Picture 1 (tube, rainbow, N blue to C red):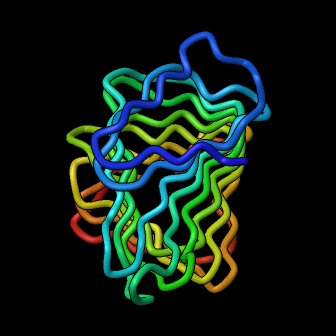
Picture 2: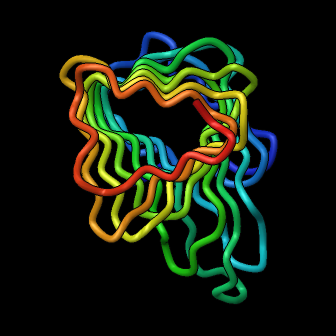
Length: 193
């Protein structure tokens, strides 16, 4: 059964390798790497709470991380946000999902993707001078993946971007096409380079 952590809880995965699902709600922190077979779900709850998880240091995700929401006392949209210092190295799966009613999804910090990033809900990539270094797969489905300004998106060697009714919208951002495949969808660059 999933382990539920709520409101000012701390998930410490340091040294943990056993499979498991950990659901975080409210304002929480997490430390340590997400191992293969582990799943971390940032789950906001309709009309109850958004979810804001902070990691004080970079980490590796070899399992799965999902930002989503579920119905609470109503099915209103609620935000889910993951913010970290340093760099997340994603070799597993990182997904932003619409859930039961959507809401904003936010990723804040440096991200090196050597796995899969699935954008299935409107998602912003934030952080002062944050770098998204894509070396594998970014799939955007029926959503917008955007930046707020001051970030760099590098589609590195081996990187690919696919869109299914999805949009890339970068504001005040450096978009480095690099040696990867940028797909067939247009990339909207506003005040960017």
